[in-house]
Length: 389
Length: 244
Image (cartoon, chains in turn red, green):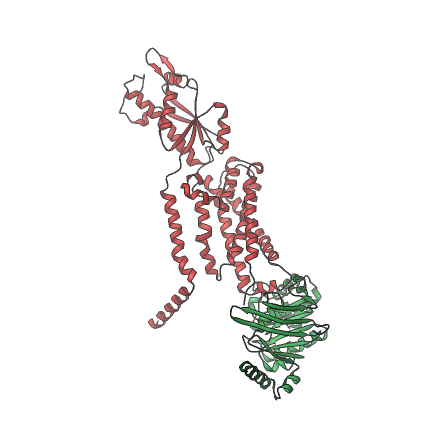
């Protein structure tokens, strides 16, 4: 070993890196960008969750207790917090509101709500949940139960002699409140993994296809075969479409295998059609190919291709509704989500896997994906410029 | 312009910023001719050839191939182009490379592809991946790719650079055969002894065509014994002309 040689080598490397100014810039800016985004996301307050209440409770009056209006008191209690937006609605429109996404859960308080409490001395909350996001579902259930417990505690604290009720000061958890939930979509057996899996499949497909397309297109240029290709009757559009088809086919095979693995081996729950899922991911992969081709025009080396990951791929994951659902993003970041192709694929994937929706409902998302592809292909063909010597 | 010229270039300019890579070149090449573009590195030979295949847009001037104005994509199926670097797909075999470029030009005559591979003496390696080949073999594969679609105009950018004398002789014998079948060849080189084998020559320097003609004519007009001497004489004359 020679220290001199090591130093000479180290100096050569430093000169090389510094000459590649974009690398230097991205070495610093890339991590800062991602950390900033991450900080914004982890620190952001989750957006309030919209829930509905159907209060048909008629209340009850007995000589021993006087008038009890549990339904109204729980409704008021729910409305008092900041984390949830509560609207009152009619029983008939519950499922409609849920499927529109206007509310994520509805608490249904039947006519005999107070009366049955007086009789049985326990509260069973009838909750109707949208169900496609397990985190939201459990938050709503907990919030409603908490409100009911609080109301009971207040009753007890007011020295109101409810037969069988524990005394004030006893642990709130001992109040006899339970939740009976029913689900519009998905259901109880769906867990957080089921919520995340569909979009993981999409994002991973996008990622690998992007790299594949970007590197192979770059190599076409750096090994000189692009020059040769363009000296044949082949046009740039021919070349780009050829890439789309060739790599798209690979992507389709990759996606099929991943999807079947997820469903059969990892036992992810899903509703809807497997073929439709395949279509969505294939469309996203097409976006990946065209994005890769476009990006390759701006890279000279394969190392520079890797630098696109923090710029083009990670923001898609963070902002596209993969880990954080878009309404939970800070308000000023939300518009960015609509610029991310991944967002539309995620929407469609969740709608199919968790809600069992079909082509009739998700086609607008697919159309946007096709649009992204078309725009990126056009831009790619324009920038697949001829090597200027 | 002469009638029936296969390649016609009229007052062609290509400037990259302040650099005049091609600076007012006018020349024409007749059918069945081997035209040699001779000049040192950086004299504009490669730029001229790339302009001819439409890879670059001229700053000004006109070009015609087979009487049709350039650029015209459909013309390119009649043009064979061999780049300086042997641009090939490493993962594909020799045959697959040759077939790919032939098909890109809309031709895929099996028998002819076999023949081309035989001609560059790669018959035994035709099923080898290109990455396993030596430099000379790659160069030959590259030539085969340029010829695989039976082009009528063949543009070769320093085809014999870095290959051994024996192979070089074989290449030139082959170029002569191609010209015999009616193909027209434009070959760039910076090696003077190759120039003797061309029917006509153009001396290029700093983007300008200093002189053209057969090697005998050029030697005569410069009153020089060798082409190299003639070239130096033309350069001196051009410099004087510039001073005047």
